[in-house]
Length: 388
Image (cartoon, rainbow, N blue to C red; front, side, top):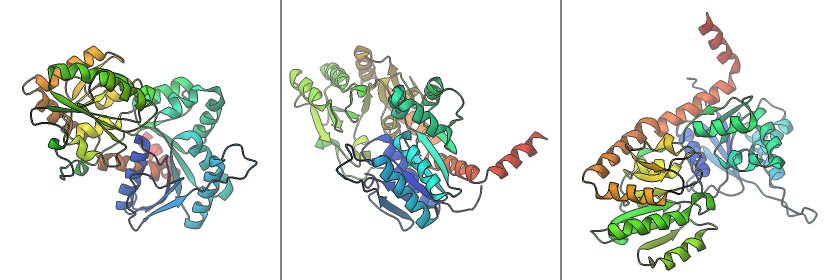
């Protein structure tokens, strides 16, 4: 691997969500490896609560000029990217989500007229939602085809992308990751803050959109609670939260369900939980399942998207078809009630997280990709030498 230290621009959506978490943690870990990192976004990414000496943040300011019906964020982003590239001599832009980030990065590349490289990481809804619309499909395809490299967070997402846009775009799978050191008890929360000693704690974390099927979470918990004394912790916010509140009220579970809203730091909450519920309709990866697994918390969830690439059914958790509330409830009861089963899933999950999704291993994959994109001639020479 090259010893060259790079100047890297990273753009992501700064709000809560797996892509923002991964992009922020990736930047911080690259900085620890000596690279200079420049976050370019509309606001400070929510996990970027510290700025080491070689990490910088550049805020994108959007014009409110009265002739614009909608604020032109994509153009403002491209302009800011170009400015940062010129002022700090960036080597590459690594953007998370295609629209508008890749499109803006390509425009910035044309504006600065340098050897700037653009790498795009697909996280999910830019393909599973936006690319399904004719108004976005062509611009997404154009943006990916003109990126210097494209990655995706799961094999399933690669398949979906190729199915929709064709196999003309080479995509490298690089999984999301966790830092095992983050999942150590620090005493911020205690089980007694949420449950009695004899009760189990179930947890769900999401943005409460319809694809997360958060009402199923309540139905599953209701069935579990009839058999096993337990509490449910809900973390996050979103459009379906009122429906969840109403379901909790109808099922008379107000004293059993704790709403914590958005939480920037969730690792301590994983560590006091016994089980994660993830009955999503779509998950391109399932970062919360990985974080739970790294904490020793088994998952009961849907057999969809990238979740089976994270959770191994019958080894680190259980998976069921989408909407199978009865099946998921029975699986949750089995894990919580069967002597030794929870402990086996716990230990297997921790081992799997460290073996397959360790931050050092995954960040090194990104680093190799950067060097390969920056030095394509060397890569070509290597391939030619291996051919003889």
